[in-house]
Length: 160
Image (cartoon, rainbow, N blue to C red; front, side, top):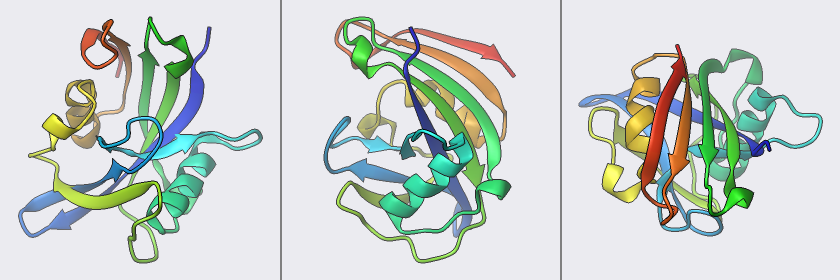
C-alpha cells in the first residue's frame, strides 16, 4: 500500500555563521509541537514541485518558482501501527524565493544552522536523512517507525 503523497522543500541561505535551513514549529495537526520541514500533501493534478511551492506559500508566505526547485530525493515513511500516517515524500531544496518569510496558522518558521539542526525537537528520523539532504546528496530513503510511532526501527538509504 502506498502512503500519502507529500512534498517538502528546504529553503537554504548563507547566514552569519554558515549555511542555514528554514524549518518550522508545527502549530497544529500531525506533528504538532515538533520542528519540521515545510511542505505538505500533493493535491490531485499537482506535480510534487508545484505542491512544494504552494505549501511554502501557505506555510511561510514565500513565493517559489516550481521550475527552479532542486530535486533532493525521496523518503518513504512507514508507521506499521498507524498505516494511515504512511507518507511517500518527495523533497526539494531552493535558495531562490521572493517575499518575506512569515508565520502562518500552521507553522512558525525559523532559520537553523545546517551544522546544528534542532534534532531534539524534530521527529527522530530527521537526524538520519536530513543532514544527508542538506549536504547536497540526492538520495532515496526508507524510514520505518517503531511501535511508539516516535523512534526509528529501520532506516535504509535506497540509492543515491
